[in-house]
Amino acid sequence: MEIHDHFCTHISEQMEKDHISFDDAFLKTQVSWKFDLKMIKLGNGKLMTDFNNNIAAGQQRGVFTRAFLLVLLVFLLMFVATRSLSENQFSNLTVWFWVALILVPLVYLLSNFKDFKLIRKFNKITLNTHQKSIIFLFPSYILLQNTMLAFQSHSRFYELYHGDFTKIDLAKLVVAFFGLLGYFGGLISMFSFIKRLQKTKSFLHYFNY
Image (cartoon, rainbow, N blue to C red; front, side):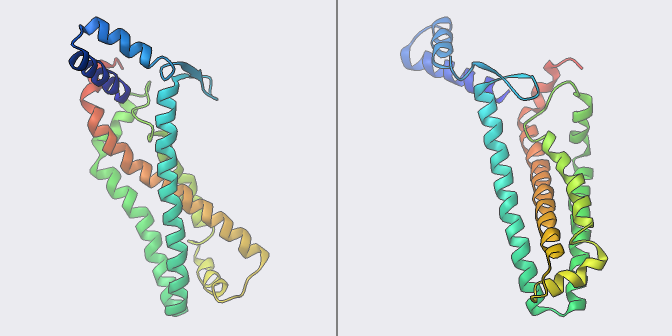
């Protein structure tokens, strides 16, 4: 639908700029978009225009770039917390972090429940490029529960930041890093899905379901 909007805008601009008919402007737009509208086969066997694929890839890169920066921020804050808080205070902070990771997506889901229900209602189409990435929330949270959010890991992470480091700790840090990356990627996708859906929701009645 976004591509449709770009295409229509291009036609309108051609008609106004060159003072030509719709048919002529449509033809010129087709020619100028020839390579962008070329169909390519994706890894899952589905066909998509090169233009659409580039938009989707760009949006996903943007999501996980922001997620990566958030992960770095969390680890930095954890380091600062271990230096300024007692072990008990650090443990309590981790519990509140665990609660926030549950409540933020849950509250957002409930407050936008009608819009999220459209995924099931229009299950034959992908409503926007962020839809499938939301699923990263769930397996990523499980990874976090088994590493940095596990109650027995609170004190271990505290000790780790004070120099008591082993190979097992390194493995846990790597798993925790990717767990946070996937979680924040899913969370940002969740927000972005609703934001973009507001622009296209009024067009959904054109689809049969």
